[in-house]
Image 1 (cartoon, rainbow, N blue to C red):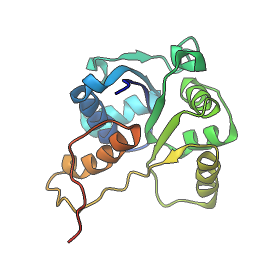
Image 2: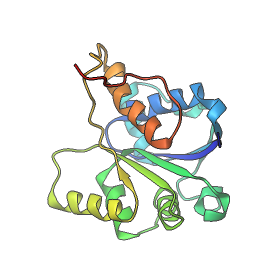
Image 3: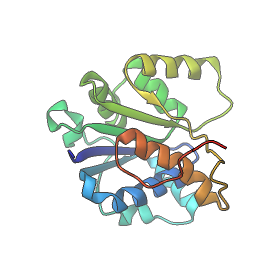
Image 4: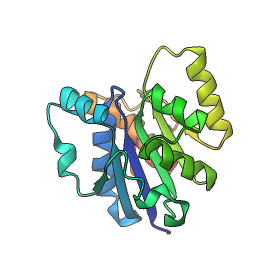
Length: 188
């Protein structure tokens, strides 16, 4: 199995729990991963602190790049990062990606992933959606991105907020292409 090189971007939409759980799962699956790189917006850090009551993103075992560090390896297709996950993905970030506006490292890296025909997964976290959001999702999907709304499933009968959020993270792990033990629908 080829090991993955993954960029994880965290934006300021509500849903820091999804990023936290994804980082925990990536640590558990590290044998399948060559490298994980992180970029977080200022709003993402503020939302993480507010929603999770900590700043544990500073303790992650991965390199965190500044939001305007255009010298980060994944700002170029030659670095060969094969997957980018934006979790949670704000509608503002989605709109800038759809418009091709590379005004920070998150949007530049997304642009690179799309132009290189690699995997871009946007865990959209907003509702309700207006027509602009829907059209931006359509544009990104037509360009090759995967829109993976943070919509939990309940077949596994989750009992905690973390278990509910993990239903979304497990789908993201599947979309990345990592082998993962999680609940699988088998019918009734």
